[in-house]
Length: 542
View 1 (cartoon, rainbow, N blue to C red):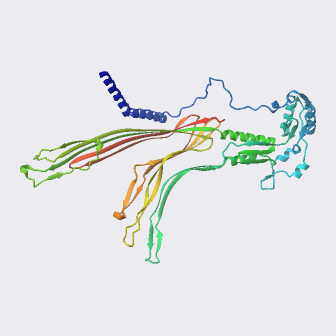
View 2: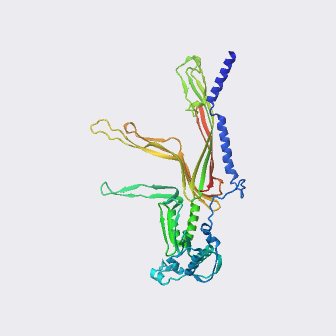
View 3: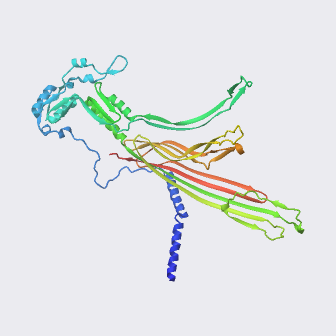
């Protein structure tokens, strides 16, 4: 029975200790030490270089499909049958020889007879504008292309050599071989339609006026401004771009005078009708633009803030009242009052009072108070965002608080009745952390980052300002906000972590209040350590 009681008591004691110590001072100290060490290491060690070579222990497979030669997709006769083709053959004669060798008809498009000189931009007068050749001029100058080289080779390889040399294109649809100069292809732009705006501004200054001065009498007088002063300094960046419109202008520069380019911003589809050479140039440009635009960047912003506070308060108060002087003369009394104490109630007090009746020091009170507080605050915030190459990403963490911004005086009653109720005009203030990041990834996964941040917070409670008294009393609240702004551009490698912002602040303040009957004081010491670290990683796209 006694053992059971002991076990129950131990169980109750353990349960009480667990419920009362969910978070202890040792947990705060551990978090403080870990965060402080990591922030110090981030600021002190500097950037670490990444390895140049990485060994992959498993089998490596490419993540891109490699296109094969066009002849590989055609019937075997194009790859296996060899034919002797003499040199200096016109295109119509080549079509006949190829049709005889393969057994498939060869169709020559009329545009193959357009001379290649007609595809060179012509200038109209002296304005520098280019214009395509007129249809009548093209009809008069139709020339049949001639392939000068002789060849003893496969039919498919010969057709490829002829078309590449003469700037033509050939296709096989299963029954007919077609040779043409102009081709039609469609591409897709990997971009988001619409304009992207980037703006960052930081300004500081004053703008004040010395007021107005009236001249003249009550009627016919004039009023003029006596002067003003303005001193404002600002810096920042501002930019706007439309990626689809820029790509369309690039394609217009690459097309021939007879070619056409149509871009649909809604579907991001590009239709090109032009010579094979021009279409190949446009296809290479779009492949390059899409490869750059679809690079993904993962951004991790970590903010470490350590706040260490140490405050001391002490006070001595002696309230001395001599209620009776020798021989019982109560006609005289001396009273000494101590000044208001700066030590708070949580500091505790130690008092001494003289209670003996008839004592010369009857009514004397002596109080001693003291406090020594030590606190640690640790904040560790991490936010991860992902964006495409060249597109900004925004991160916001904020709160909005309301306050009394203004009051409207009530109107009195002519009949002497009760006055109306004053009007209240609410206001709101938004504080928090706002971050904007614009990444640009180069070919070797080097990342250029433009970073803008705006951090603000309330500096204590709202300040109340009042005027008037009684029925004319008006009160408003004013917010006191502190913050900082940052705008910088950095370069880092893939996966590297850099310190964007690091600051250490120390603050000291002390007050004392001394008098005849006592003295007190309050002393505060604080240290703030804030570090903002950013890690950028290139994420391969599909």
